[in-house]
Amino acid sequence: MINIKVNNTTHQFAINSSLEGVLNVLSIPVNGIAVAINQTIITKNDWNTTMLIDDDHILIITATQGG
Image (tube, rainbow, N blue to C red; front, side, top):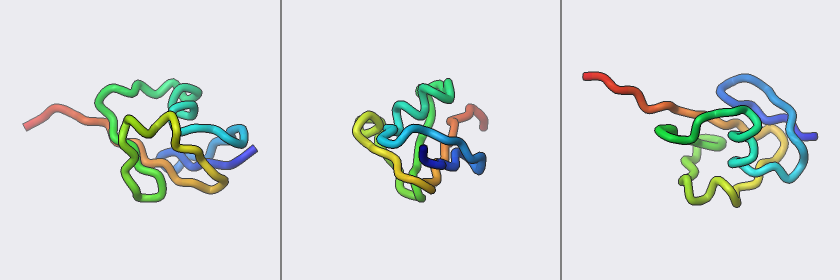
């Protein structure tokens, strides 16, 4: 198991977990979000191939409407 911090909350995942897999396990809707790992933005096309390692920090930002 590896420890991953998602929006400042620590979660445990299997070794070789992808970013897309983590989002699915946490039931996070993927439309309208931006994701960064260790302060680096990851494009949606790379979520499936981006593998996480122990102590990665994921930041999920949700687009909101306003003016």
